Amino acid sequence: MATRSRSNVISLTRIYDAPLKAVWDAWANPEEVAQWWGPRGFTLTTHGRDLRSGGYWHYTMHGPDGTDYENTTQYLEVVPLQRMVYDHGGHKDRPPLFRVTMLLSEHAGRTQLDLSFELATPEIAEEMRGFIKKAGGEGTWDRLAEHLARQCTGQEQFFIARSFDAGIERLFEMWTDPEHLAAWMPPAGATMHFLRADPRVGGSSLYAMTFPDGAVMHGLITYLAIEKPLLITYTQQFCDAQERVIRPPFFKDWPLTMQSTIEFAAESPERTRVTVRWEPREATDADLAEFMKQRGSMTMGWTGSFDKLEAALG
Image (cartoon, rainbow, N blue to C red; front, side):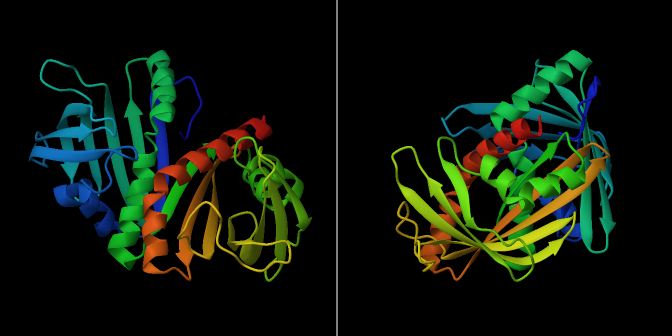
């Protein structure tokens, strides 16, 4: 989340590569909402919706374990293309958990989403931060990004974002300094070291990753764009020790090339939001299907790496 202060309000900001109307429609159209609302693995059934000031939204979220969660949202204010204010998490005799204010603004063809969640006390807000993190609740906004990419470009992408308590220059360094990157990027139990590192536009880096069972995999990173301290774009490929591109051993089908775009945005002098966008390149239909199927696993993998990055930042 975007603030760590002792406040009863949790704030979050996301920037989407989509026009404002597309983002508004994703919230306003029940058929679209059903494609992204909730953590990964959840599905949604809307029973009734009256999107206006004083209206309501009655829906059931279906968890991946089969558990159903009934909710009734009460809309206090709805201003099309601008804002919503609503009470969230209540149903019948159950009071709402918090009040949400959603604001939209367009900047150079991109849309900024600002959310604030107002809870009763700072203590409850702190508990809610922990619950949201454990439940993968921020994945909702990643799923929204993926839905918008599909709606606006027809492309399947993967998104994940997190805010860190460190300045933007330091976060940028953690991604471009090979020693730092090798310390936090590998999955749990694995180690990583660079055999060659050349993080510049047109440059490439070769790394080896060793797993607990002794297996070694190599990877090739080729840098396409670097705009310090705001953006890094590179491709990633699995390869052998001679840098010949190969498919990974753990999937029968997987894109030969993945393109990563990492965006850094300063939320304050000592707080930075990192957004990762992954998209397949040179993908067959089977590769693309596997990529879409593995979004949950990718979320788990990136979450583990982000946890290690958070620890490394101290």
